[in-house]
Length: 121
Image 1 (cartoon, helix red, strand yellow):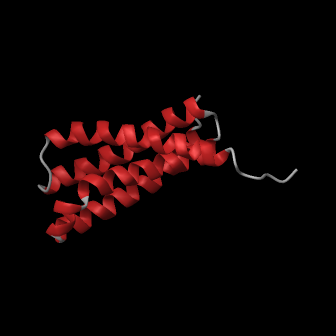
Image 2 (tube, helix red, strand yellow; image 1 turned 90 degrees about the horizontal axis):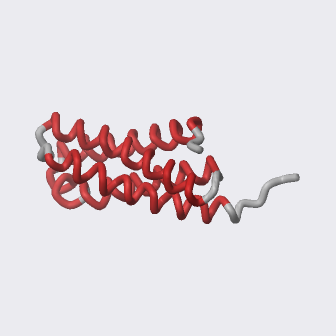
């Protein structure tokens, strides 16, 4: 049900973006204070959208794969932020769960957009 190639690609892109945000927040406190929460969830939604666009496996599959991609990239980014001392440990659970939800939403949107794609015959 999950397209592993699409999942790896979406998770990799999401992880790179999450790590860029975490490193920026480590050196620029304003980013950590004002961007981490919504920026992290937006990146997870993007990862979900990318998964579903590439997998095009229906709404259920798009939401599931999007949730996995969104949670995975957030988990890695938040873990690095915790290790750097910029985020409390409890955010590891809360942030990962909320990012799974936004990843699923991104997956639904990505599937809707995948349905509008024109393919060559």
